[in-house]
Every structure is written in structure tokens, then in C-alpha cells.
Length: 570
Image (cartoon, rainbow, N blue to C red; front, side, top):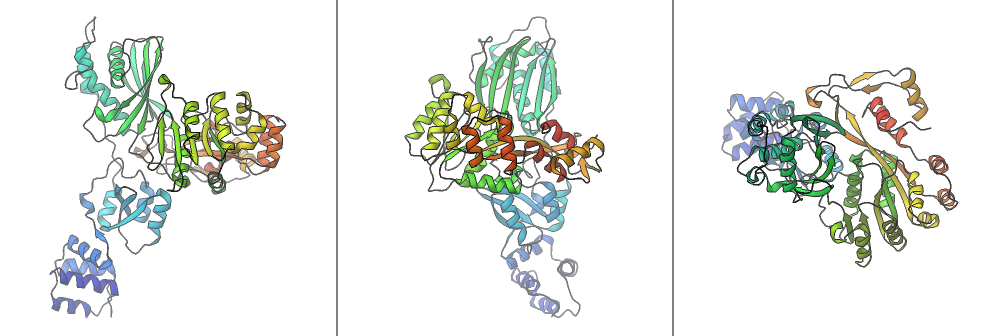
């Protein structure tokens, strides 16, 4: 018989739906020519006037899947957050929603059984398969991911008129009323524009004659807006009111938090960590964007090599000890720790975290926000946690000797402690702890591993340029990882997808120092950092520089970006 089992089932479903008669079914089954899936679709639509949606409904019933009308789905800024566009285009899938731990994915080919497993591994979410039309999925994937553009022209004109005089007085209604005042509109639009643009930080900087607003996107600061300096006082005051800070105090730095959902009608669920500082031309602010709608990434998506991932997973499954993450602010330490906690979070494990601030809310984990004003510090929280019978403790940062001592004590008394420290590389963490006043034998007894990390920009997959490195570039690759071959660099003019920068997104690089017997002896003898590094490299540690070159070899980033992010090994 020319028709397969599934095609016969589709015809049966069309008969049940009343779209085909029994005679038409017999005629189709008796067709002498072989009909593939596409040929059958064309025949049913052309000769039997079956609409595309009726055909989709029949297919979904025959295959036991839920039909999905892809044409009604509107691609938006969060569509490709979990799965990038390239993966979706290669496999003809479209993410159309998320419900709890389930991702809703429209598939064009329902017989591809390996793709759902891949998606689950990449995202850490379970997949619900929906059946969509191939042509509609292709059409949606063709379109560039839109970015909501917010125009500042109208509000800047209003501000120019409002603050145009020589004497400008900040009126209460300009700062308080949600229904009036261009300053309120400006503050909201700056935050909304930064969110839609994927910024991690907003810088509001008063210069001598202008107020400059800059965004940090993928680790690079980009200027967005220039306003008359007269606006500075009103804008800063408005932002301080939003986070309940003292607008009269302009001589001292202040810290606050904005829950932006209270100030916008749009579906933007973000918090902003605000820091003010008195500068030479006025008060400046930096706002860190904390997107509560984003979830943690699974560990394989953070940029770990297979070797480092296996070692790190083994460490986080130890019953006790201390795991430290080091690197500068904005190097991805928090995301790595959250992802690790998500992986080991099970109902039989008690996890407590002390954070300042709580950047992501993790289900099933008890989190504590620090309040230094009332004496709730990391050290105070750690003491309380030790009486709360936890299995795993996360401390946002080890800042002083007191916190370090209690952290080491916790690691030595049957708890797994995860925290961060500000050092340049993994071996340098030992010297930093000794400098804090921790005895070397206490460090070697409690420490499991140190993970140093940085974030590098990914070269844009759409416009990247392949080339053969020569001279110094070739030598760097051969000396660093013993490899030579073609690599990628960023296109000098970029493309619309990467905003003309040549780079889009970021990836982590890691230096994982696992404690071993030789390292324990060296730490106890108070060996120099250089000696600790040599021992670790002999035992298989890849330095940040080497890991960055591996990313260059794999085509993830460019050599220029790798050398700009971390220094070469001496």
C-alpha cells in the first residue's frame, strides 16, 4: 500500500473530523502512486480543499500531540532566551512559552526524537512538544528578534522646555506624582530601554556641562543619552525617591533598591540595585539591573570545558568543605553558584544562603537578605545558619577575617560552604585568605577547590570572519594550547543582529584549582602563589589564559577579545 501507517491515521482523523467522506478515503488509500508526507499534504489541500489548520489538527490527533497555530505567535525579546536562533533554525523548532519547569516548543518534524533530549540538557527544563506547521515556523525564524526601541525625543523636548530657564527649581510634583512630570517619564524610560537592550548596569554621570547616561552591554559601556546638566539634580532625586533614599543627603554615598514593577504598567519584573556617590560635578548613580524573570542556567551552558565541568560537579557533590569562586565584579560568579545550587538542590538537602542582594529567587532554597544598617552581616548570618541544621551554606562574599573564620569553621564541621572572594586568579586566593588572618593549615584542611572566572564576549555567529592567524597571534595559540589553524574574528562593521559591534552575548572562562596532597603540603609550608600555580598546572589545571584560547579555537570568541580579557601566562 502506498500510504504509510501514520498517513493512514491522518486520513482517518480527517474522516472523523468530517472533512473527508468514506469514499474519498477509499480513493486515497487506492492511489497507485507513492505519496510522501509533503505530496499527501499538497494533494489533500489541492484536490480535497483541506485547510492547513485542519491538516495540522488531523496530524496532531494522529500523533498524540497538541496542535499549535504558530502564525498567531508574536516573536519577542524573550523568545530566544533559552534557545538561540541558530539552534532553532537548524532543528526547525520555536520556543513559544514556559510554564513552571516546562518549556513549550513547537516542532515542525514530530518524528525527531533526539531534539527534545538536547533541549532538556541545554536548558535544564522539561520539554512539552507542540505540533506546528513547518512553513509558519520557518517564517517566524526568518524574522530578526525584535528589540523594543524607546524614543527619548519627546521627553527630552519636554525637559528642555521645563528646565529651559536660568533658574530651575525641583518641584515636589516633578518627583512624586506618577501622572505628571517629564522627569518621572525620563527615569522610567531609561530603565525600560536598558532592560530591553540587555544592559547589566545603568550609569548616570554628571559632567561639567552635561548629564550623560551610559549602559553596560556585554561588559562594554555604551553612551545612550546626553542631557543638560540642569536636569541632573531632578533625575538623581527621582531615582533616589524610587529606592527610598535620603534626597537631602548629597555628601555621602548611599545604597538602595528599586522594585521597578511598582512604577511601570509594562510586564517588566526587575529590581535595580542602586549606588550613589558624590562626584566632582554632582551626584552620580549606578543601577545594577537584576532581572527576576530570568532563571539560572544549567552548568553545561556556562562555558565550562568537559574536563572542568566533570571536576566541578564532583566538588559540589562533596558532603563538606569549602568551594570559593573568585574574580572581579560582574564576572559571573553569582550565576555559577546559583546554577550549582540548582543542580544539587533536592528535597533531602537543606540549603541556606546569605546574600547582598538576593539577585535571583531560587525555589526550594531559603535565602537571607543582608541589612548592614541593623547589624545583619555575612558573619551574623553564618553564625545563625550554623544553628539551623543546614547541609549546604552559600555566603555572598567573604569580606573580612570574622566571616572567613566562621566560613572555615563551617566547612570543617560537616557543611558544604560556597562563597566568593575578590582575587585575580585561583592560586592567589590562598594568599588572600592568609592575609585575612586564616592559618594555612586551616585553609588546606577546609578548601575543596577554587574557581576563578571571567566573562568574554561571544563573536557574532552571523557576521564573524574566518582567517588564518600569523606572526604573534599564531605564536600565542601554539605556546598557550599547542594548536594552530583557522580561527574567527569579529566583523569590523558588525551586522544588524549584533548591533554593529561584531559581538553578541558572553561566555565564561574558568580556572579550576582542585586541592590535592601536593597542594596541601605547599599551602602548609606557606609556599608562594607562583609555586602553587605550578603545582596546580602539573596536576591538570588550565589557566584563564589557556581556557580563553580554547574558546578561540572552538570559534566562540576572537583572539583579540581573549587577550583583552585576561593577561598571557608568564
